[in-house]
Length: 226
Image (cartoon, rainbow, N blue to C red; front, top):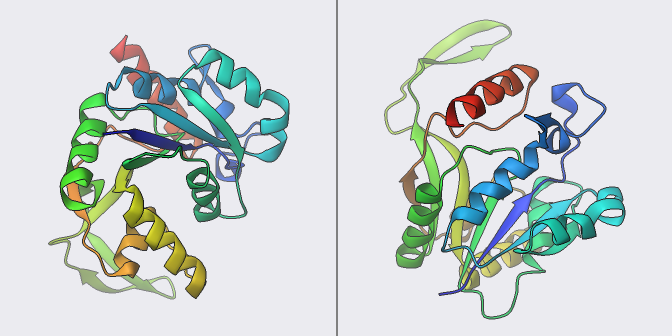
């Protein structure tokens, strides 16, 4: 089984409020993206990585990332939206790849175990995504006031990694492109195709760095890991 991973690091990080894109912000002396790639380097099932970056960074430092991380085979430019970026990465997947993993470059606290479980579930079921059950109370709000409480039964918060059989994800991208459909994750493209998606247990620690407070949490988590 040949497994390739698309790691997306093409965002501008506007919500975090820094001039440097969040994937390049340093935590403990290393870019956030480094910590994510490090986890993938430890996972024996991952054969190679396609890294997706902003075009300017591909031109400026793309080759440097390939030299430093030998399993990064290609660095490609992102698109206008996340789905476009993943699609650009998908178009650079090597021939003969059976399973494609998609992961956020700013989600450095996944684990080899989580990646492996997702890949194995995708091999068996075709598509698999990591997620955790919703634990907070959910409210539907209208004009600043609570309209109703939403039952959290059977509701899950989606994370990455997500993994798919190559041919299934190819079909999903083809249909989405034909219908001009945009989903918020690749799992939703599989749903739109009409196929089933298997849930794999993620982790509360598998956070996506989006805001400044997330950076503080990431610093704390990394210091504990070390």
